[in-house]
Image (cartoon, rainbow, N blue to C red; front, top):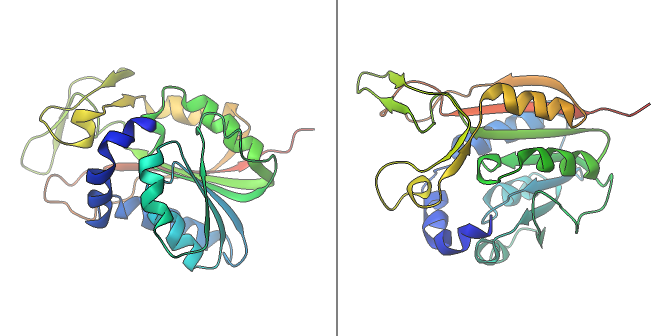
Amino acid sequence: MSQYDSFAEQYHEMVQNGGPENAYRYIIGQLEALSDLHERKICDVGCGQGELSSRLALLGADVTGVDLSGALLKYAQEKTTPVTWVQDDAMELKHIPDAAYDYVVSSVMLMDVPDHRSVFHACHRILKPNGIMIWVIMHPCFQSPFSHPLGDGSRKVLQYAPQFWKSAGTGTIRSTLGAFHRPIATYINDFMEAGFSLIRIDEPERLNSSVDQLPSLFGAVGKKLIKP
């Protein structure tokens, strides 16, 4: 996600204005439902400017935030919360040790990488036995290149094919940097193929339904399988 270097200031402002808030709430809610986070080791893969990592640290977790963008990590390093910041590629996590974390989280990031399978495998490696991964993506049905709001709370979906895309308009993250669109089945099957058992999937309700009333996010929770 080093492409975010050129978009770091605008992305930071978007986070400050609550852009990814729904994803943060979902991830924190799922973590708190699993256990007390005090001293739990969590790796936030694709941490961006560090908002989610910082919130998790405030809840008592021992957090490592990983991102490839040095510009975004500069914002993260300005935070006062005790988080370990690491510049690394989510598809490799070569600076992160094996079997080191209780939880791995990924907030609205998997669509930014060309090889999401490598991210799943890298996250599986760094988790302890029975560790949990929670990930959230833009909803592949309703936040895709051929999905258009109709103004009445609904959307028209014209195509569902995997592809790299950029949205119409100018100045937004997706019109500037684009994203990799993949069907839900691709993500789920590749998650399980990487060695995770699926615990649950969710489509969190929008916090702001002024554009439409359909879910903008898709989330999943899985447990690292222990190989026989």
